[in-house]
Image (cartoon, rainbow, N blue to C red):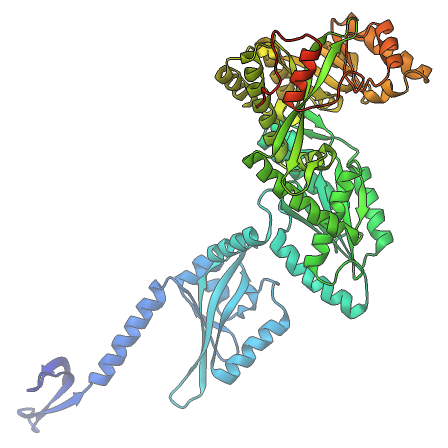
Length: 614
């Protein structure tokens, strides 16, 4: 008796599997009589066996983690990928419940919902976190399915899981980039807007107040210009940390960009906002240490309150920004609450800034010149160049209106460059008309002196017009001198080596020390007009003026008095030894043609300059 299994090919070409069982039939003496053969079509069985072998191979070789449990949740099989993913061997988990993988990241309700779905639909798919044998966490995309037998009875549960930890981490990084500032790790504008909408909805429902604080670092651009952008970024990181330290867990500290930050303060009214603003101002009195430098960074803060100053986050942010501008106008390092009239002022400022930008481009600016004279004999000794804006619709706009706008934007550098160009062109015109060499002073901000490219631009400008550097004197304020960093000092030294004069404007209004005057290559000090104004009636001002003159001469510097309007003022300054003066006593700021006429009237030219202008 035996069995043979083989394939046969039917006439139609179909392959079938056959079980051929044969049995020998013998007589009483054992002699063979016949052979009984039984043929059974086992094609279906062979196909099932093949599928089982394939399933076993797939189970073992699958990259996905597979876990099989009985209806009671006891593990009956796991594949090698499960061991790789979880750290558990098959022997360690057989007979145990998959709960040993739970991470604690999901609630009991989460798992209950999974089993409710499986009971209702026969399967569930989703993501959850598991815990590795070593304690680490990983996230999987898992499908859990019921397996039923031929009688439709539940036989197994099969869970097939794909490790998506790296994908999830990448998604989280992308989401982080979308909602958090890459430098400071603070929420960005997008996340702030989302949180603000939720906070405003909650405040409206509870009838509560809410505050928005708009913060800006004072003169942050100076840090970038003097120390470099890497150090500026390092300062911003420390600023962000200090802001976080000063606020509550419920508050949102956001970096809008650059040196601008916004604080969203739920359940905060005027008193609370003021208290926090003052706390921040106090916290920023402590210096920061960046790349070995001790830096003092102050804040200006604008405050808007819900619902008084706006019903939407857009309105609150806009109004807090308007209040911030007021704080800047009030001298910086302070805070200001929003008032409705600020919107008008903000709009006017933006319009003025836009029109000033165009004025520089299309030639609406004019250079005016105020004479400087030698006090000893009244002889013309040069001029100070001052910018004026001749607006096509509004006429002559006072510098007090547009200079602060330029200083608050990037226009102040463009304005200074325009002045230097205008002065050089006018000097060429005057030279061609026979005017003896004349030194003209130009006011520049600290930004020019911190600009590494400024020296090169100035050299090119002088060369293009064929002018000697000695025809220019650059004025910087005393406050700019106090802020002088390494880049500023290097620029000043290079300017003096070039031959350009350097004067400190408004001397006496700041707190500069002798060390600054000795260390930096200054050639002149200008006594501020606030001390000259009461020179005749105020003994203290007379003493101060005399002290400045004596100090300057001891350092080898010449002295210029500003704002001289009376003969008595001139006389006192002359007695004190002051070298030069300017003011309405000698002549007001005037366009190039009247200035040339003024020089003609004093015999300072070899020929008439009337009518010779830019």
